[in-house]
Length: 119
Image 1 (tube, rainbow, N blue to C red):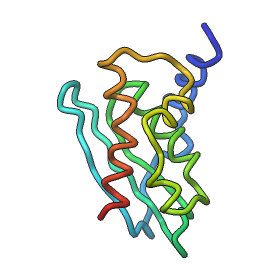
Image 2 (tube, one colour):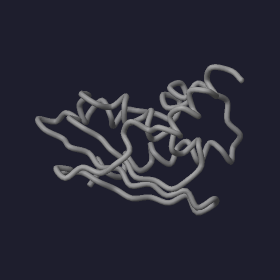
Image 3 (spheres, helix red, strand yellow):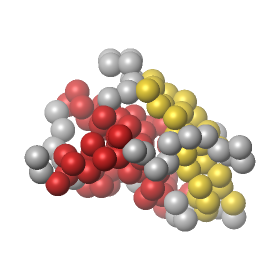
């Protein structure tokens, strides 16, 4: 097994950013209708920066790992930096090639994050 796949499995089995935030002032929920993956993202934003980020999810290893990796990488960044994140940025963080079906799983967290910061 290659190191990137091991990384995905590690984030899926023990996601560091799993949970909810009592002080969340941004949150959003989304669902991948094609497979049933579901996610809710909670953000604590202060002075236009992400102070903390958590998620709750039901889904496959890719969607859970993607959320965990994404949220770890947005902490202490400004909302403007977060708004500029692209699909390519997330795929680079994941470090694995994905089929079109799995791409939807991976992008669920980014789409939900974007919904949260637009509210």
